[in-house]
Length: 441
Figure 1 (tube, rainbow, N blue to C red):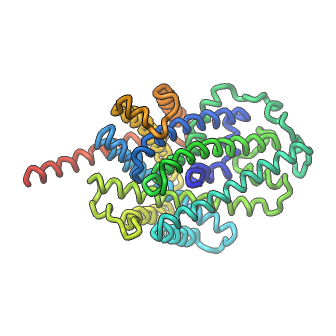
Figure 2 (cartoon, rainbow, N blue to C red):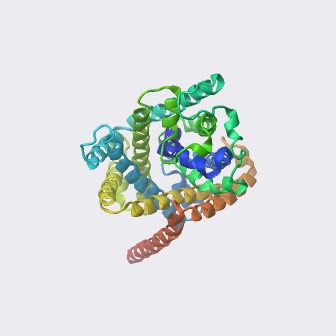
Figure 3 (cartoon, rainbow, N blue to C red):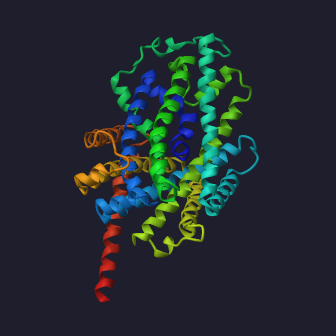
């Protein structure tokens, strides 16, 4: 449920119409392609995580099997991803609450939510998991309701809106299944891949799972299938209910669908769902950024005080530092224009693609450390190694190219390399200082 919560977010509930406009019904193929890429990545991560279940996950593995500098860059990039993503989500919470309380300041709701989620993350890991379970369950129930209710309407051909054309024929009747050409399927890769970022969070839970050898493989195998069903299934139903070319990207396709089903106050229901989706993303972000900061400290890549755990094995200071940074970010985003907000958020999405690539490369290096006997004893193997890794890496490169051509993500493609250069310089300076201290001693 944590993985589902991390990968199904506001983008699906509010941005489905915009995604559909990119490629028409053929966008379903884009989701299937990205789903397969994600599955390959998660199997690769799962193989190492089951053998070495530590909370630092891919940052620790990159440090061990690639190089300390790559572990440094990976860890800080993932912290960057969630810190800025949480800023966006927690800022959005204020806007969602103003739907019901228009006279209240949005920053007040954002602050209250951040404080509440921080307290939850500082209580115990079980509390975090319990809250995330219920947040994810709300999203799952909403999607299932849409799929079941929408299919029922298609089958009985019930019309309850301005859209008179209902039926599976909507998937091919308005310019064909691929109305914008094969290239549109490829062009949609960037936005679709962005919606899957977060599923790798499950790797960070390995160090605190009771039985990772059992729970991690089960979670990885099930979550990819369910996420793909939820994404593909919900968009399949939506495009059967409404001609894809008549949907407004500014309006939620989910609101349209529930209106069609006959649910009064559909807009209010979806607003509640996107509110919980935003809170879920921020909840996962606080957990992930705190654990990653703790890992960086244990690798001497951040102040050592951040690696301290309390009696409940929670890195309290690391969590507080992450949430404090998010708090500053909320204030900055209230001051700076939306353009700066979107630039930083796009860079965070691109960093997610970088993390996925690191996972695939790390697993290739991990395999090279094993002899035949050790390889035969692996408890959970990746699929079609190493060909699946190379195919996934090639597709990730293609996704980055598509992001560079998309106005919503192009800034991130060009900003992220600058971020990596800054990290490399910081690592060199830090290593130089450590070497001098060590030489003196």
